[in-house]
Length: 220
Image (cartoon, rainbow, N blue to C red):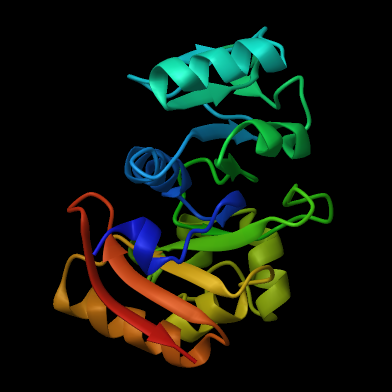
């Protein structure tokens, strides 16, 4: 099964939030969805320019439409140092130009777990939200596994030395009703994914983006 199918990606705007793995998911979805229609990937924060994909940094609506017609899937954003920031056009305008818009809506500095500050995530209005959790954060101290570890610990009512359980990670999902439990690459990871799914109020896709495999889908 494709990730776009397992995660029920529909035309419109999809926002990716949570821990490490969002960029990999964004690129995977773009590759799958371009078989169904035109795709724009972008960010409401900052991302590195994706390798192997056309990037428009100064284009207007006509430029974007022409690039989509030529390539099928493109990245749109404005230069922000070595990274890309939000596109000049609002996400709602991008959604009028492409069948699918996939937006990375927060950052985690590559860490598997994430706590959101008050100003995060920056989710476009009306977007379908997917929360990404890295299996490699389970069983580790918060201080090692989480971006904004003090905030993560505070929200759980513990200290940064606390070992993160699957149930802890599920309780930290603060937006959306779909989660990708990524990097499930061992029997322990699979068991942790099922425990996460049992504690989560929505749909969990247990998978490994690196291996290109979905192993289980559990909906509560």
